[in-house]
Image 1: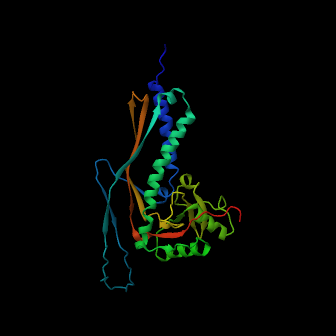
Image 2: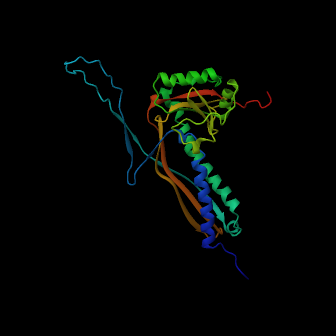
Image 3: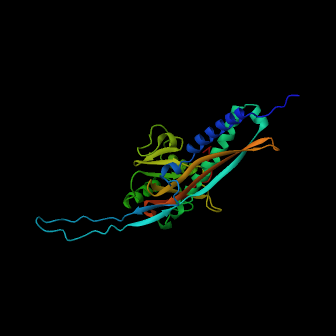
Length: 290
């Protein structure tokens, strides 16, 4: 009687499809991660120290008169480090023997979704502490045109470095587009400074030169129907990576299956509290028949 087993070639093929799909899905499914700075922690390093300098002031000069005023650099630093995250999936021999490429892609998509969701929500968790915890908007308020313009004005009045962006839940953005009597889409290209290939599926509109993005990973606050989005400079936060995506495979003979373990080593950090602000607006379900 012939014994059917999953060969090494079949396993390599299955893993290749799963991992390729997982990488692609993760990279293209975490909008907030792609709106902030990215840094790399070198091999063998425990942390990276990021300097920050204060503002300086230039003065009027008189011909032939020496400059007597000096400016303080005002340098401060922040130490950033990383931590491991990961998940495990099991490919059974039966699935591998069937050589079902679509099934492998589904598994990969699920893995990629999980890794992307984790990293994206880690960035979102930083929103509420921006701007010293002082929130724009309020519970019960809607992200209409007037409130959106006020958030942009706050960012510019407080000299948030460009490029600026605003990100919120799709329901909050829907209230905005309704108030503007316009639809999201292709007539508003993503301004320069952002990776269009990674963010095009999340881009909604541009208002006063600031792009608005949707992120369904944003969750309500407690028992309310409002949530924190943010108006941010790209320099407000960062994702520090030491290992972006690593895979290992282990055979489990008694289970007649192979385990695939995916891990990453990263950290999400606030770089400058004054370069962003949380935006609390309603994100309850919007009517589809109004």
